Image 1 (cartoon, helix red, strand yellow):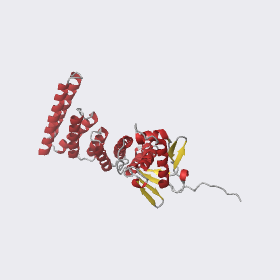
Image 2 (image 1 turned 90 degrees about the horizontal axis):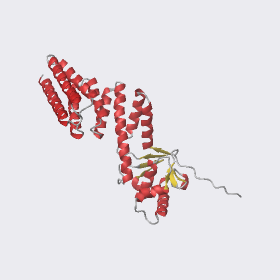
Image 3 (image 1 turned 135 degrees about the vertical axis):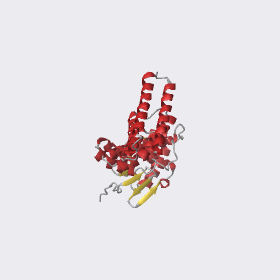
Image 4 (image 1 turned 45 degrees about the vertical axis):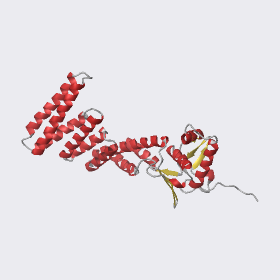
Amino acid sequence: MTLTLTRPEPDPTITVTMIGALTIRRGDTVLRAHELGGPKPRQILEILLLNFGRPVSKDRLIDLLWGDTPPHEALTSLESYVSVLRRHLQPGHGRFGPLRTTTGGYLIDGATVELDLALFDALTREAQRASADAAYPLLVEALSLASGPLLGDELRPAWAEAERRRHAVAVTTARVRAAESAAAIGRIDESIAWANEALLDDQVNEAAWTALILGLETSGRFAEGLRCFARYRSVLDRELGCAPSSTLRDAHSRILMATAHSQGDLSNEVSALLVLNERLLSIAKTKSAPDDTSAWATAREAEHILSSFLRRAIDVA
């Protein structure tokens, strides 16, 4: 009689969420971060997930887990932690589950694991190559996954913090692109909403402010557009010491003119003041040396005064 040794059949696909709280779903079983055998097995899994489908060497894992002060038996400890993690992640499957051994390291098998971060990245990459009407639903799907910060329940070791910042920037960028794509296909209210969400992440994001103010202009919400422009100019002046782009200044002028036209008799006065304002800025740009900060300060102050007057005049009307 001959015995034939066979590998255990792999479990159904494991679904892992790492945007927000770390959660693993395997069939009807749901594992939380505290159910993976301790902090070190959990962090090994997180490191491998951040390198999804790519091998990570044992030396690199030791460096990330212990930094400059690894224990004397670091390699033995690492291998022990991996065994603990496997018992929780893929019970009964040993080395043949999603956590695979490679030459000198380990990896998470992308063929048997569905990872929300990998899906988010794939959707945003595809949206970059697509037209606006095709990109918008891809971005909406990607952003539906962005329910919180990456590894939001981690204890914030240095490697996790760097990846968390990278992902936060990617989410903000996706929100700005969603705002721009929505505007391009005429979904202005959605464009405004996405721009506002991006500004919650980054209050000096010029692309988000541009999408917001242009959206308000397109939808005829001129008073909101003026208020947003004033807020952005104040933020820029305070944080970076500079003025809004020419695109936004032009939009501001158009909104002022549209508001003035709706008030009848104010049209000529507003036109004259806008011409004066643009002329003053032009003089500051062409006649001042790059290091002549006093001329720039004068121009900015004059712009503030003129715009404040215009808003008050329109409010009174």
